Image (cartoon, rainbow, N blue to C red; front, side, top):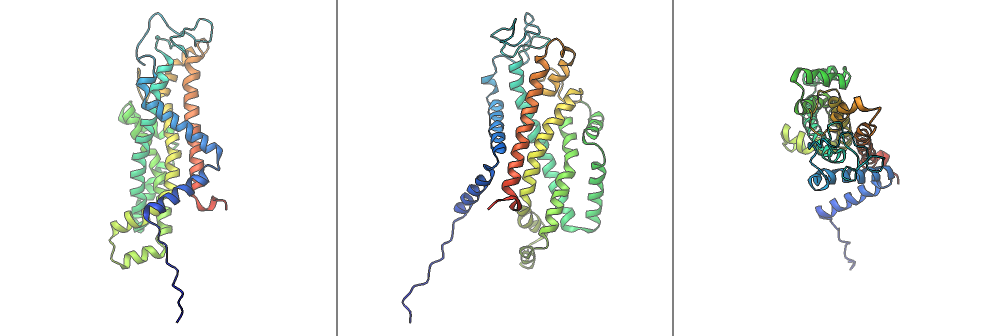
Length: 304
């Protein structure tokens, strides 16, 4: 008989496994410097939105009649009280830009939440049951995708009525097919795996199979799509606001600010430039962050 004891098997706790997965995710995410920069800009945007009442020097809707179209503080004729100048009715540009971050984050979160929940449910039903259920759902999604997204959103807002709430609902409906098709493809791929067959043999019902067995293994591409849709929602809502179909004045939404300032573009450059830069920087940062998430979550893109 041998006196050598068997090597004990070390089992990691769930918390240790999560920490290990998080460390691996951050390792691959930080390889993309643009994604890290986008993450920091996004965190800054969130902080600005959360602490807007503390950061903004003025009320965003307050009109100073003695300060109409005042240029930025560093330009001749500028005032220290208005660092980025004022608009045509005397409202502080910096304060409106800061409060505009709240609108952008709110729009992105609501649109992505509605589109994600609806798209995932439709994609799960189509991929899991197949047959006529799959055909009906996917044909409806194809019809929605056949229209240019902004044009379809405009039509829906025209039917529902102008306003921020209706604009968010319209944009969410336009984005649903992307999540539905992505979820359907992932579910059809996972359905062929052995763990799904084992769960079905063990007696798991359809709802448990769809939401607890299959869906958690389809989340990686959905997270990336949600990030990219977030930036697209900010851009499309700004476009609808610019066209007068989104947030309505005097709301300090960036697209609405551009719409109000377009007639002053030649003689007051700041009223157009700063809201445009805010949209550009926000959308670019979120897109860069989405690229990093794709690199970190997709096993095929991970470098050894």
